[in-house]
Image (tube, rainbow over all chains, first blue to last red; front, top):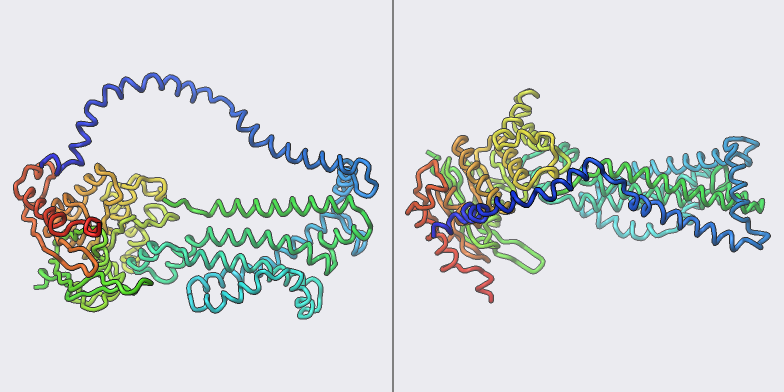
Length: 300
Length: 268
């Protein structure tokens, strides 16, 4: 009876008492091994190979197939020719020879500027809207069908509306980016707000925190990871949209440049552009992943 | 004059409207808790003990009936009734000190300076033996430590009533025993009024002045209230052979397993 009462403390003692002998005898053998390991950590070659080798093989395979297919082609450039053209192109990325002939660097920068403007506007509208939708279920139910309806619309369908309203190409392109990249931010922020654990909100209620403290200390940090996911998706979408929009609106920009080179039948440059668009998109994504990691918190 | 009826629960009914229909959780609950008293609510899981605690906390409001604390109706949560949650509920993006400070700032921020608030935060963490983890985040410390910080956050508010919702339920037996001893000391020092939910019979007998045993839900009621006439300070090792202790423990076990068997067994 008594033993049962204090089973917590007593049960563990008899179990622990005989242990020390084998426990003291057991450690010595692994100890020398562990000290040897800490004093001279073997370099993890295998891990390095596994991290570096597969991507290199993948890339080599792509270039190899490309070279094989274009061996006897007269219209499609070979990898070597494309590389040569790229070297020439990037030797002077910031030249200006009139409005329709500017360096690739300028084209990329102008595109990024449009993306930044459109995406910035989308973030400043979409994130607060997401908070409102997450907080008030009535508004959520009111707006949800509209979001579902408008979200799948192709970016190019929005362009004529932009042209009509703004009567200029550049604002129309920015408008298209805005409207296409706003949805992931609205949706993810709203979901984040809805998923703030009830426990945290209970803490806020018990402590009787002010609305401002609830927002800054509980809601915002809890929603941030979701919000950043939305931002990441949005930037990806924005970068996708800009190429298509610029093809139609013209001006200086990577999308227009692709179209311009197609008109010049300069296929090498088109292929270079594809790589450049891919790499810039990758860098944007990585930048945001880094930011997201910096601001996300560990549960448990 | 009010010290015998510091918390008063009168004819409380609790009905939840769920998707599956109405669920009658609590029926005709009447309970008074005196100032400085340690009361535990014990019962099988699902009997509504946490619901009753949430009512006292003000997190939920009763369907009918009245709850009073210090002669005022409980209409909302407030810092004078601090809650220690079952799963500690520390904010993962704040350090231990910031978690406690959030509570301290709310209660004393209007009257005291920054240095004083910080001293309070440090003192609360010191009290639960967590002074070394001021700048650690919750995911860097163990479950027992998190629960200590949760208790520190509650105590730092200098609440009139401390509400504990199975605070040691998720901990291993040794850590639990240790924290129970700590809680006994802390409560004795602060002379707090405590209402605690538990399903651990030993814990209930060791800590309480009175044990409130609840019948199984739905429509759970207070089955029996058992006074624990053991002198304080209490020592778990000495009590093991104490006749009163053994008798109290037996009575609770008898209530829980003979007269109100586990709901699963009844269903089977």
